[in-house]
Image 1 (cartoon, one colour):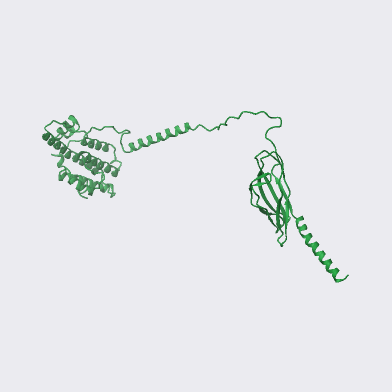
Image 2 (cartoon, rainbow, N blue to C red; image 1 turned 90 degrees about the horizontal axis):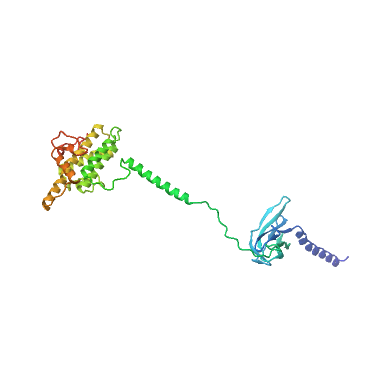
Length: 371
């Protein structure tokens, strides 16, 4: 054997090795395409499970399918995933969702896969076809047309009793809350539509109501003093048309001095408000006797200032020369006349006083004026 023959033999062996290597690699790869069902009706989706089992380190490239894939319509194509097997191989998987719109038997078209062995060798593997059958929804001997079925009804629970019950419950809670609030304030559940009482009568009635709450015996001084001062503020607003509820005691000085009140009367109102502020805001705790003197002082202030309305009305009557009635009608005028003549017990809520004049009684609140 000469050198030329030896070289040809080696070349032939090399060519045969190169040809046999991809074939050996291809023999180590197994490809399957399995449908989730073999029969379906027109338009039903079917899932094709593509599995490629190959040695570890191989890479499988699955092409992206067009929407129309032969007789099939591709709805979706999942991402490929690779998992390791117990025998040292790996499996690359992908799910392809397809559907068919014709009757008959259909095979999936050829699907070439590109596989690389990681050493630079690349070869192609063809996915075996899968068979799917599309069957009609009607039986073979069923040719009779039927009417369209009526629309299916939904058995929904009846909600209107719950809605009405919820509204009634909300209304009941609102009424109960309003009743509790009015009760806490010591007021009737439904306020009177029209109150024809004159301001001084309203003040006397409110002071009687405050006395009946028993707040002094319970040592609820802050609430007691607040109710008394609020009563006087309401009296000043109604009797003299003054804006006093939104003002502090120091701001009331200018308001009262510019009103129809006499300077001494304005000073006594301010002294009472200032002393009460100590209890309401400075946590000063008076004794029970001082609290009783507070309400007597409030009555005397109302008594000493209620006549200003009569004087103003008398001046108006003399100027107009026409008869008018006193506050609260004829009965209110008689009550005022009796009270101003020295019989204060004629007015509801007052007590006989040994003082010569209600307006001359000095405040006895248990603390100095102007504090």
